[in-house]
Image (tube, rainbow, N blue to C red; front, side, top):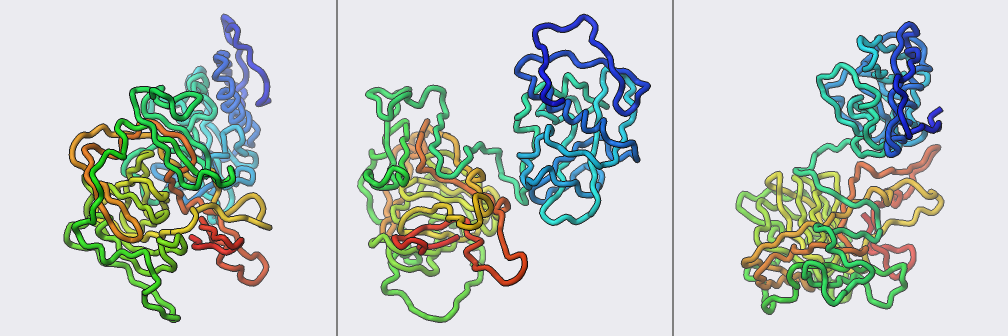
Length: 494
């Protein structure tokens, strides 16, 4: 079975042979026992081989791919068109469909006899009845990627010893959920919502056993960024420790920004009041050069940033990067929703790439810079002056569905050691100020804590709805909520 143990102490001079599972007349040698670190990968490969051996002989389908089931629609590039496959267990997420858990039983598969005994590997493609199963689709994984082991593309078959040469849980073994738009670069993330993360761009940059040593590694400076008061209940505390090349407090006094910001406000006590339903058309993309901050336009809101109550909704339409400048919002958290064009959000904690169908949250007090890898960009911004965004309670829904905490991504440490003039903009009560730095504020080499920016892919949202009749309330579509002082009453829901 898949759980049998393997003796890794020594190998026999002549490995025994056994019968080909699909062609009894052909013998092939058993693979040599792998090192201890490869046992799990071997079990993974053996599980797929045994599952294929139990299948009845039938018509030959594709023999170049292995089908992994679940997730969002995925383009079948360079793969023959096959019917949808049966769900792997009850999961819709491909990361839980490890090859050792694949259910190939019930499929008609035939594998051609190998030309060389030593290169046998059941190259199987699974199929299922039905072209349109809602909620499921096929992910076609080349056999040469099984268990994360990359092999020569020109090889007609994959040997068992090469196929199990990597760990069972290697990330390349399972394809990621499909995305409509790819990020301009491959960025690394840490996964989880509200976790206490730690990240270092240089080995040993994080102090061990303490937050503020007398002398930090690499001669770094220590800063703490607090998102809550020091004395709030521990379960509500939000703070992070940053270790940077130069302290951020070394700057000239702030002064009002030179460019006008009359389109940006954080006080709605004297605004226009109307009971009518309103809607706004998207802003046209500007023809002149304007960065992300200068393009912000407040559409509506409630309360004020001075009283730390309420929210504001902005729109942006930018055409150029925030070169040589950054923004720190002291009024509240920014929830950025791109509608056209991807954004590359550089923060003190690292870089976050966010595209349409994704959202990005930048907490209060974090310096960030927005770049436009796709050119012109347009979208929306939800700003909350009170509390922070959190996951909604599920109640009778149970412990799953809606936005899963494991699908939220926080950046990893990435620093730049650049000397020269740098403009740091500061937003306070809706007014913009600026100060000159002689270095980049994104010089954090290491950090740890739970007060961090993060992103979320809306394609991973699992909605719930009525099955028999009636229409549930729109709160079932809540991804994030900003709670108020009244239980069950939110400042804003997204």
